[in-house]
Image 1 (spheres, rainbow, N blue to C red):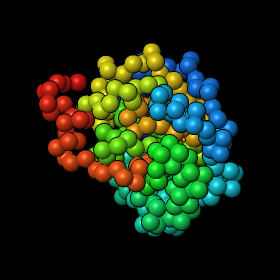
Image 2 (image 1 turned 90 degrees about the horizontal axis):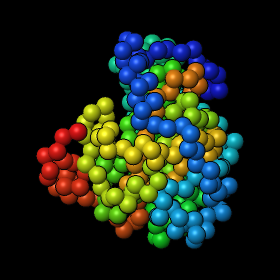
Image 3 (image 1 turned 45 degrees about the vertical axis):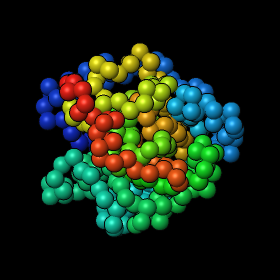
Image 4 (image 1 turned 45 degrees about the horizontal axis):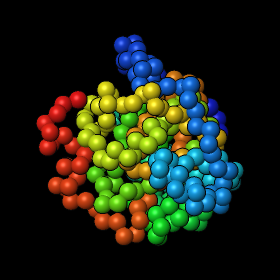
Length: 291
């Protein structure tokens, strides 16, 4: 299957009630009338003013980080990983791999690729892209290091929500200094297929307890939905965001793919939190509160 073809839909919801719940979540926990408009064209335009703006607001939007050749190369790499032509990268499926028999079924059941930096040179080139590393160096004020590499896939007609969360609440990203993520669209990321949504300034709240509900997430009632800003992106565009920023993505009910790369960086001097520090900061262990 060509990486540019549009697959037939394979509905991922088990029943109508499940779909109705997903649509209710999309309608009540996200808003679509406030869209990020303040953007810079390319990373080489990043100034000290943008650096201050990033740490004040928690994110920056960049119109173009990857060119067409880099986008195509990344998509080809993702499809090669999914279909076994590139090995070593880990794949997370929403169904048992033994139940997936065709390339279409494999693609539509794949939610995430990760740990590709050591195995897939085309994706490693993005993680170590000189423009991205230079921008991260400006934001951190010191050299960056790759802390995590993923490709996030939200397939057509049923690609699931990623509930509101902070990335540093996932233990492998829990450092003693803020990490920064870059989320790069490889397909058009739009309002109807699960583009990123952010709560500006929410990183200022620091670490917030997370709960195992639909995912490891912020409690729904704690989400400031009225402050939600959607971040649609063209292919090659990117959202750069603090690891403490509240963000999420609604389900994809469209017939369009929404493939992306997400890479996290930490400052070179950052150290991992101990398990005890992580529990204190990101779980409800100290308060006993429930979601």
